[in-house]
Image (cartoon, helix red, strand yellow):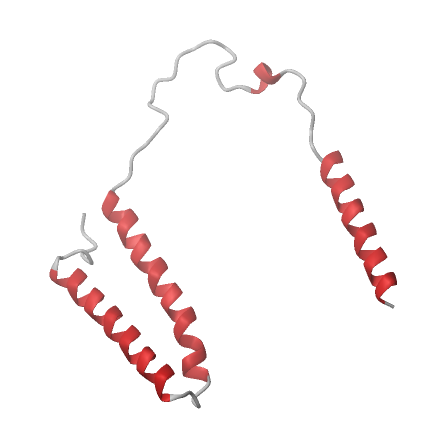
Length: 112
């Protein structure tokens, strides 16, 4: 039983690798695909900058999503030991202190 599953797994893996290699489009003239083929210089600077404040707000939302993934098992399962419940309260306290500090420092302001 397991040898059949293992052989099927190997066959599927090998077929996937073959199809992956064959799926590449070969471009023999690499200069033909470049945006500066005709020789003109660009009018605009190709790299644009964005606000660091926007980046920091994105990080805050990322951490809030990560926080929800930690809190979900505690909210679903109610029968934990006192140590887990204490850790949960400490975790929420640290998060609350962080949000209050960000609010005090005006880092949660949406206006740039």
